[in-house]
Image 1 (cartoon, rainbow, N blue to C red):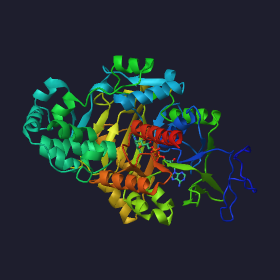
Image 2: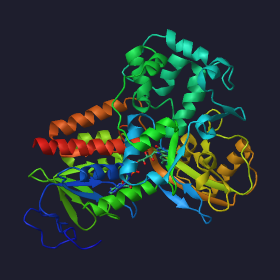
Image 3: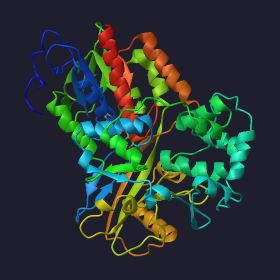
Image 4: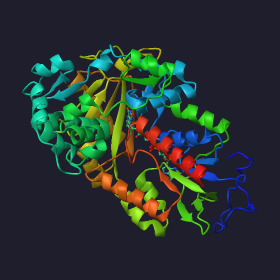
Length: 505
Ligand SMILES: Cc1cc2nc3c(=O)[nH]c(=O)nc-3n(C[C@H](O)[C@H](O)[C@H](O)COP(=O)(O)OP(=O)(O)OC[C@H]3O[C@@H](n4cnc5c(N)ncnc54)[C@H](O)[C@@H]3O)c2cc1C
């Protein structure tokens, strides 16, 4: 760690508090906000705090050696980009526009790689069912035509939705909701696959209200999902910029960055360090305790920090282990927000061709318990193929198969995941040759699961924070959306709340 006002000091300044035998890390006088976790949520929270007209002191504490959390891009020997985590960000809606605005503020406009609306990766997505790839129907004509693997045109599922009464439950599993409104095939093929693709989760356990709030709200407000989605919730004010207008005009379905999505956390870091945010890496937080004056003591390995307010952007279950005994009810709720693991295998092939062109395909659990889906990276972002252009695909594996393996305690080897991935690519895409390059990673507990009743957990956490007037704000993928856009918004909201509190205090 560098020297300067935030270097470790053995002589606590007047405003610091004793911290056992550990020295305090001291900061200049003024309100201090400590942000836990340097993933995209913590970076966004720190960024929006730092941009306030009169910003507080901000300290971002990351436990590992690098920033970015699950966002990680690795360059192969020929310069090709392999994404280990997210690979595309959606520009749609207010949150999509907000992220594009951020991209411009961080000076990344010229690095953006869009997938335009007329591109095959924007138009074609597939389901792998019955040993074959099936394009998902698009447009009105697609809904009227027979579209295997569905036994009837999806028009009938739409008609069912229009005639069904509104549900009465405050929450429902994704499977039960979809089966009730759109029928058993849409539930067991389409929504089962979507839950696996987005959450690596089980549609019989995930909550419709928390995982797909727009579908839940559509039914609540218009009795029908289709009517609700068509009529919408009214126009919300959207940010505006040249990049946002371009994305709208060209109907982008998603975008990445030339050097991979990790350019985003890297740009955040440059901005934060140049605007006076203290970024501590390789400093896991071991505990939080509340001092008599209402300040937090944030315990690091061999030192501690003092904070007027803490934003937690680490996983809920991690935070639950750090909270003091007084916050046991909150810790209990947070410990029930669990996450699942995903094995990610990036493969590159020389001289190979895909049987179809599109974004990728998803696999329902009834077809294959192992593979969640395969992304055809080279179709969406050929610019990232490197100098000896090879075909890049990513196989995502998880679900109950991985859960059972993890629970059994058996050794999870890279060879096992690579073998499963190669088998899947051979069977599902006909790529039987040896890959020229491969990367295998097991991401443990990487995707939070919003199971049935997640909204009640959120309510009780918020009520506890408000009732106890704890200077703690929750942000990150554990709470209100796992997509990168949602995480950035959670960081922004956390900053807005604190800045609002500051103005009012
Ligand atoms: C394989 C995969 C593919 C995905 N694909 C997409 C996609 O295509 N599009 C999309 O929009 N989203 C995608 N997502 C989701 C999205 O990437 C994540 O939800 C998001 O990056 C989570 O960000 P976060 O900052 O909330 O959490 P994290 O990335 O988990 O960051 C939390 C940080 O906190 C740190 N930390 C934890 N404990 C401590 C501690 N005690 N002290 C200090 N630091 C600590 C961790 O080291 C980490 O850096 C994907 C996710 C995965 C895993």
